[in-house]
Amino acid sequence: MSNEFDQFQAWLMDMGDVLDRFMRTLPRSDAAALDSSVKSLDRVEALILSRYASVAPARAPGEAGALDGFARHVGELFRHHFGGRWKIELDDARNAFFRLPQVCGMTGRQVQLCPLTLVTTAVDRRSGAVLRTIFENDRKKQGGGPSATARS
Image 1 (cartoon, helix red, strand yellow):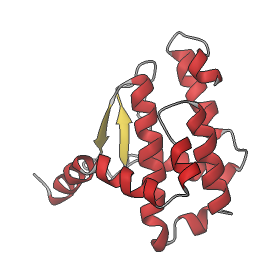
Image 2 (cartoon, helix red, strand yellow):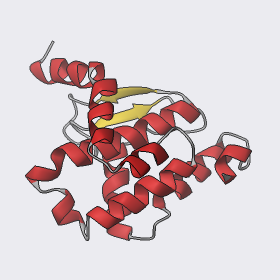
Image 3 (cartoon, rainbow, N blue to C red):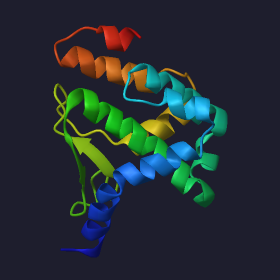
């Protein structure tokens, strides 16, 4: 096994602890709003937009922990609703998500989802609805319209 694969395995094993530490960095009311509900996507995107005016500050070295926390939360929320598993591409440098954690095998989705790029896309587009829109599009592909949890 490669060192990068071992690092990814450690990243996975630390998921719960890292998310707990990330939540403790947020104000209590914000952390309480970040759960597994679809409504949480709106709150996390608002937090991301309030923290980052553009992608450049989000990618600053000092923001790696926060960016990772946001991405982990988004990825785990999608997994909670659509299933799937975390993976990492380490063999094909031409892959758009090379060396980035992704969620694959989600119900209704043919391609993997990279939560980190979802977060930076939300920063770049600044609409406040990127994460929810992608989630709702995936829900429709799954064969269900918006559910009660999606509307909440």
